[in-house]
Length: 616
Image (cartoon, rainbow, N blue to C red):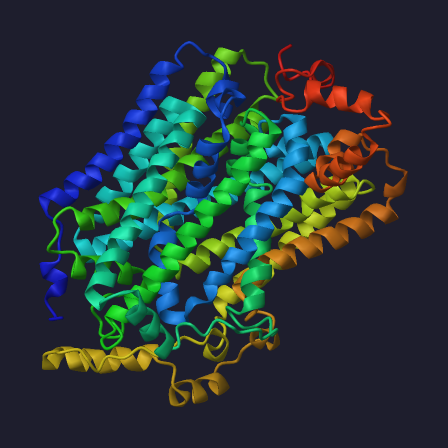
């Protein structure tokens, strides 16, 4: 590992070709669907894929859309620096899918809505819907900016690819196929991009395993380096990653994404039947787990290769997010085209996220901000949604410029979802699980949850938690062969990155910190979401009860019915087996056969009367 490896590792023609190929395929899918669906002229087809999608592509698309470049670049670096405790996300994924398929999916699917925020108006009132919509739009644009910018920055510094060229090409291709092809294009490009992401991970993992001489040496290196110290059941909420913060905090964050985030809900509601929708969630669970496994193992490979010479402390890369591309350029530079594959993997992670965000933003804007207030024809609406896709694409590229001013990428992303998604999750939970919650309670709950989680989130940005809570693991640089200038450079950076008691001791006594800084602000960033949710629900319930919520009569279809859960059907199935001889249950069985597996948007006559927005 010589100091000039940064210069020598740069892109060759083959790499650019692989990368361009990935962009070309994505664009081609958009063109294909624009051409195939040219006959259908309504916004429902553009935004919802005509509600005729099947479980498999939808599930892969669900996986791809929030597994962005952040996953490809930051998870391995996270494992490299803090150990493999993010592997516990696997538990939170499982819990998330259970909660989503049992609580949120049945209600949204039954109502056959295009925008999840439509539900808020049906259940509460127009004001609640508007607040929810605006929050969602803000959250998504912020997040998308980070997602476009993160990989561009990391890859630019290591592979010498042009930063803004990369940002703008990603943004443009994405906007192009969203504007041309709508939800179907988004879903099918996601499927392709998920494949590219896995291929990129596997190329790195396989090469590392070959270099290190097998899987076992990598595991034993990680064990000795303390990277497998995951059995950490410390309940202290200030610790950054423990079993509890990752499983509980992670579950809240992911439920707020899968349960209520427009980008996800829009997809599984577009399935043919509720069974397909449920299935898509569970197949998607497999995808999430395999990507998590890959990224954690890639982090272990990263540590195993650099256990004696950490490129970050040695000043060869300027941010931990660049470690992964650095490893790729380092071990795969003799294989032209493979680094290109990895870069394509990182970018397709971004593309899939950005495209689902753009499509979701267009859907929400049309359904919540345009349809209720204007009287446009379907063709007009269809063109409007295409125009909006374009505008949001441009906006997100603009946000990428702002993202260049933010700090740690993974954390920034999760914090945005926690701070805004938490209170929104609380709001929807109130609506679905608490029949006596009214609109006053809902709005006050949402606002108070938002205020508190913003307060914690911004506080944590201003006063970062003390190193004792974050606990980065040791990184070694003994094995590096440097020239003298670089060793000087190394000692200076080593002091700044390795928290030693000498440097942090006196600083804190000089710094006048607010009282809250040491406990409230240094709360683990994964807990921002649960705090928002719990405060929103509890305030919402109290206010509802004080303002006469118990007198409220809510339509049963707006809350969770016991028939909605799979659990109920299991119990009923066993009862059925017992009662079959008596023949009491014939009526109900017949009725369920008729309506059970159909999408209410298309068959159920009653829905057409109550919901006039569906053209009958």
